[in-house]
Amino acid sequence: MLLEKWFPERRLFLRSDTDTRFIRLKPHTQLMIAGCGALVVGWAIIVTAVLFMDSIGSGNFREQAKRDQENYQLRLNTLSDERDQRSAEALAAQERFTAALEQISLMQSELLSAETRSRELETGIEVIQSTLRRTMKERDEARTELERVTADADAYVESTVAQDLNTEGVESIVTALAETAAERDELFVQAREAVAIADNMELELKLLEEMNDQIFTQLEDAMTVSVEPLEKMFASAGLSTDALLQEVKRGYTGLGGPTLPLTVTTSGGELSPEMKRANALLSQLDRLNMYRIAAETTPFAVPYKTAVRYTSGFGMRWGRMHRGADFAGPHGTDIFATADGVVIHAGWSSGYGKLIKIQHAHGIETRYAHLAKFRVKKGDRVSRGQHIGDMGNTGRSTGTHLHYEVRINGRAVNPMKFIKAARDVF
Image (cartoon, rainbow, N blue to C red; front, side):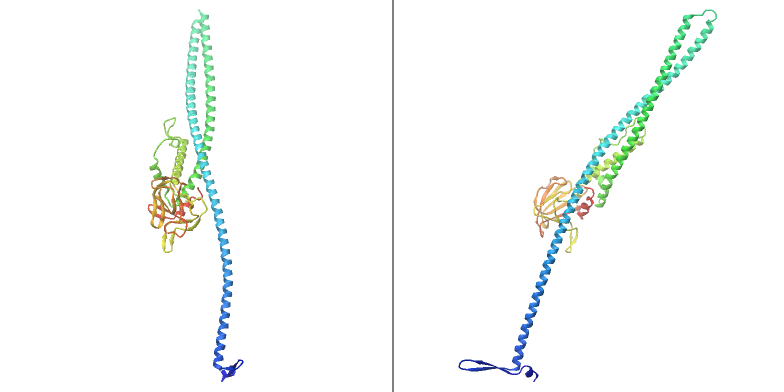
């Protein structure tokens, strides 16, 4: 009866011109109609609320996506500026390194000239000392002869003065004594001049030794500044400097030239401290040169020279080992060799697509994958910085990029170790 209270029976009259009819609406029928109406109204409210919330969420998402895009573009611009700054710093470091090598070469030439001058001065001093010794000997002989002549003259005068004084004999003796005295005085003058010359040459030799010491100090400082960053660079890349230098020595075995150790002395005995110091510097210069050769044949450079985006690194990715580093850029971006070497492969290789392999010294190999075009062929000898191919999207690739690998004795290593190690040197 509660239902009849809220929904009493109603009649809906339908009148026409000729007839009148009615429809009886029972309580159950009215309840069903009211329920259906409530469902329709509720559904309309819910749909309106969902559409309204979706509109608000879409607006927020677009704003967030726009902000993320702006932040991403700002980050790209910052990275591009940093890359340009690093490139400028690398170029400046290379120029400083070249200038240091030129200064070392100039100092080396000055050092060799100074050594030659020192040997000449030593030879001159020995000649002067020999002349001085000979002069002193002649002076002593003259003194002895003068004493002998004086004694003979005294004896002769005593024997003849009593009876037969020979005036002419006395005059000849006096003349001989005067000549001997003059010769003695001349020898004394020559001896004093020789001593003065020897003192001047000793002073000049001391000044030359001081100048040599300054040159040695500058060269030793230059060696320290030049060699230590290279040793740190190879160590940061995980390479053994001793093994690299031994391999360079085996490949470059010619002797001669200004870096050959100095072994000639004026006395023919043990090397002087200056000569030992010069040999140590020349050994350091040879070590620096071998480091330079090793650096040219080791992939410390980057394989690009334009703006790229670092998209993936070395390590596990999607459950598999990613054995290189990925750099994305425009299609056709120039790709460059990162070290001197020989092209051992330039063709298609399964998931790599168009692939270039370069064999370098020290058992190192670099790979450049997903290329669009080759600029070299198998067997070509390439230099660091040479254009070898164009960036593409061949093989198993999701977009235009370069897959770059470094392998040592067949084992893949992180190529960014080499790039980061050379950042403060080249």
